[in-house]
Each structure stands twice: as structure tokens, then as C-alpha cells.
Length: 180
Image (cartoon, rainbow, N blue to C red; front, side, top):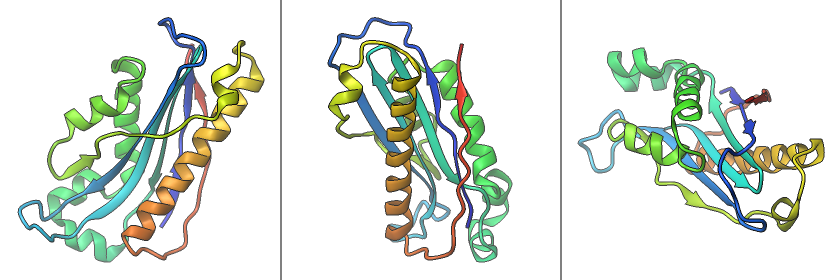
């Protein structure tokens, strides 16, 4: 199984009080047997959104492909939608980045995907104090936010894979994109 990680950072356009911020994370799973209480669940990835004074970040880590046995399980329609999970989720990532309010990207995606493709209700995580106390938007703050967001995504994806009992090798590629 392969994984790809895509964080984005953008200066906030709204006022944020110094010392305040949020970090939310959502797991992304596919339920091919939605009507079955104990049906098969396919882990696809994780998205996280961080808002600290002066900076907003959105990140995603996702599988790039599914195993042959997983493709057989999800059926024709599921295969058309998510046979290459990263490609499909990258489109959702871009939609949320462009259309959701700062701090609301995960709720935007959870509301958009209510059925087989499922974005969990965002879980709030603590933010290190040094990210909340930074006064400038320089390279140091951006680097620290990227590092923390990447660490959160890696940790959450590992938890998602372990919960799903997937022990196949993984690969990671980091891509960053900064909005104007």
C-alpha cells in the first residue's frame, strides 16, 4: 500500500486572537457494505486542518492504490470512485481548500460525504504552545506548522491502518502547496 501526504498552508484572511488556534483531524474510510452493521471497512486516509494565529494549514495523507482483494470487495461503482484513493481525495482536498471557510474544511467534507465514502466527525487535538505564541508568519512558523501537521497526519494514518489490521508496506511522499 502506498501513502501520499499533501499539506497546504495559507495566511488567514480573518482575525485570530494571539494564543488561540485549532487542530482537527478526520479519518477517511469507505463502507462498501453500508447496510451491514459489521460490514467491511476500507481505510483510505486522513485529513487535518490547523489554524494558528496568522496561518491556516490543510493536510492529507492517503493511500495511492488499493489491493486486488480490496478492489473485488468494493464492486464496480466503488472501484470507479476510489480505485486510486489519493487521486480522488486530492480533488476533495482542493474543493475544501477553495470553498470551505478557514477552520471548516473537515466539516465541509463530512457534510458532503454522508454515505459509503465517509469523513469522520473532526476530532480536536492539542496544538503545541510554540505554534500559538509565534508572532510572525515567517519561514520558521511555516516550517514548524508543516512539521507538526505532517507528524499528526503520519500518526493518525498509522492508527487507521493498525485498526484495520493492514500490515502491508507503505510509502510516503510529501508535497507542499502554499496559497497566495
